[in-house]
Length: 163
Image (tube, rainbow, N blue to C red):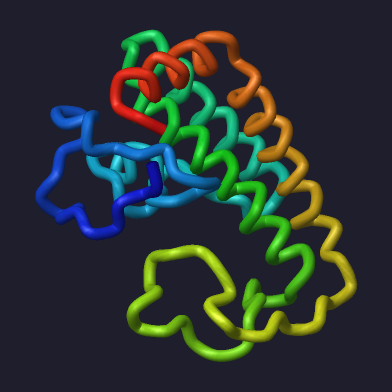
């Protein structure tokens, strides 16, 4: 099932209502789904490899804690933050200043990933510091996706609530 952007994210506690959560594609909902956004976002940083190492380690620790508590939504959100650490660090590695697309995000697409009809700006020479930060997040993201408990809980969640 596609990610539902029509929910009132300010009012829904997804820990109490996991049936409303949709895995979606990629990082969909990573900055919307509470209380997990509030729990994970303060730890999300990628400015330097040292900062990225600490951040990815902390977020992976939250991922494991959510799995242990059988809180799939929390685990999936932590996985999304690890993925976003990789994708955002790669964006900054490829585009100085992090701006990938030309022009503003259309008002009706704010909070959603994608070009939304905008042209991609030319890439700058790769920033090796951000590339290293991206690699740190990529390793933890891969580890999270391959975690047997995550795979089992994801299958159970999707069987119960839909894909």
